[in-house]
Image (tube, rainbow, N blue to C red; front, side):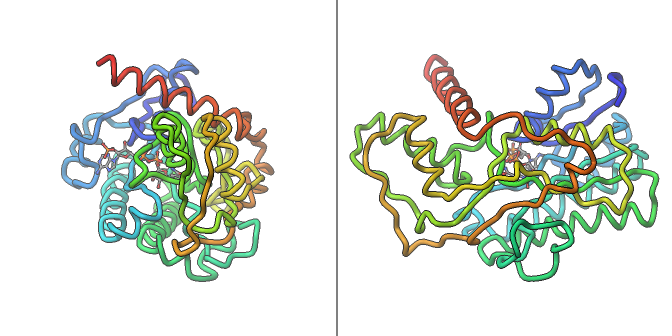
Length: 318
Ligand SMILES: NC(=O)c1ccc[n+]([C@@H]2O[C@H](COP(=O)([O-])OP(=O)(O)OC[C@H]3O[C@@H](n4cnc5c(N)ncnc54)[C@H](OP(=O)(O)O)[C@@H]3O)[C@@H](O)[C@H]2O)c1
């Protein structure tokens, strides 16, 4: 991409969108377009259409959506499916309408069948039913992927690139334990336990499920690589992972060490575990030539915890 390309980053205040904006600005892109949710509701087709007609982005990074952990998915399933479908419908149509050259769409590893052979390759999508706890979210994302493929097949003027990152983390993640994903929820839980001098932290499930985590800066790096690559429609969608997973128990112990929580970690097996393993097969991305992630899990957790602490200091100092 040329440094003067008009790039719209939708969802720029979120975890992945903010990583994208940081990277574009660091690389010297001069025309990065952003709008907050309050300024532009991407689920509102009329507003989105009018905004695209005026701003005419050449590249759209679609990192806006309704996102959350198991609890949030279980308590707000209707919101997950409805919001994501509405945002996708309005943004995809508008990107096509103004003939943006490329659009990147963030799907999710929750789309893979619950009992998918590991690691999960793109061809295994729709070969079985996704995990029940996040099914409405997964269906909205599967619809998004197939909308991308269908737009490419029918129109071809805009290349819609669906990507499937595994569990992301980094600055601007959601740290509210009630709605966060596991890694950021663990940072917040262990931090508060340390500060309050709690002797124990009780966690959901058995700790046995295995997950793959990737820093949002590495996702942005992989996506910029894809935007700069010659992609054929049949090389889509593209998984984005590190290639290594760990158990939730190992993750919890690592986060506790980084945060400095020295109390006991207790597991509650009566709570749901979610899918037993979610490791992506990222060989398609590697074959396209991406050099791989640069941030290790331990370093990423350390820098994310530092960001979490600095944000807390900011909030306290006003
Ligand atoms: N986080 C992960 O582990 C992960 C993994 C794979 C794929 N993804 C996908 O990647 C995308 C970005 O994820 P993320 O973790 O960066 O999410 P995030 O931190 O929750 O950010 C999502 C952003 O979208 C905005 N948004 C939501 N609804 C909107 C609307 N109707 N109009 C305008 N803006 C809206 C949110 O703004 P408000 O907060 O102001 O509503 C927020 O800034 C999502 O589509 C997600 O499904 C995420």
